[in-house]
Amino acid sequence: MKKNQKQIHIAIISAMKEEIGDSVQNINNLSIKKYGDLEIYSGEFNSKKFNSVEIYLSIVWSGWGKVSSARAATRIIAHEYQAKKIDFLLFTGVAGSVDSNIKQSDILLPEKVMQYDMNAKPLFERFIIPSLNKSEIMVDKKFHKKAFQAICDSREKGELDFFGKISDGLIGTGDQFVSEKSLVKELKKDIPELIAVEMEGAAVAQVAEQERIPWLIVRVISDEADKNAHYTFKEFINLYKDYSWLLIEVLINSLTKELMKE
Image 1 (cartoon, rainbow, N blue to C red):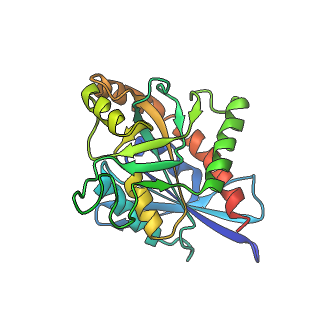
Image 2 (image 1 turned 180 degrees about the horizontal axis):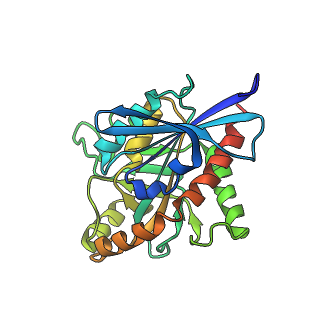
Image 3 (image 1 turned 120 degrees about the vertical axis):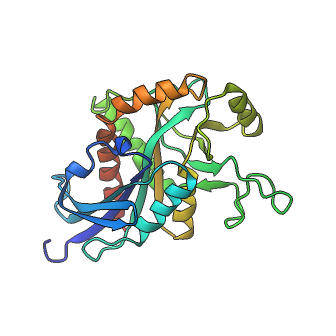
């Protein structure tokens, strides 16, 4: 590292290894830290775009569900590389669409997330997360705006041809793989804004919020949360693993530009 060179440490979490593709292969001086059965891969991001900053990446795949992802988020936030704490947390992976306008391969960069299975009634209204006293967790607008534009720009350049259109909105997290239209109909009735469902995002966002770490979630649609979801999901994830790093790299570059200003 050059003298007085700025350091930025970005954490990347996914539920499955396939959702982060070649991320680990794109860092130098790799080190692995084990916490029980969880492994955090850390190293230096070799980017030619930035000369005045040293970019560190720490990467972990958590396993499915809110507990596993919250555990991974907590561990990686407490993790240091080269004595540098985490500056930003990025969660990435696939999701099921519950909006007829959002199709397979479309990118979702939600402005907000919620836990659709949270229900502490009668002590709190349905969906309210007691520790936050709110149902929706909002992303930092400046990071969201810059990341959204970066993805749009990359698509226009033909760098993300595998992917479809990009949307924002509300994503719901719950400890259930949604594959029944009856459940989708019920969720949409209760939460009309909902555009997609998954099993980790809002849990990671809650941890990041409570730990005062800025965060961003990006999802790519794998299925339409219907009776064929488990077949479609398996086929898509095997294909997506070869393209996921392209999207992650765009986000790393965008986040680095913003973090350099702070």
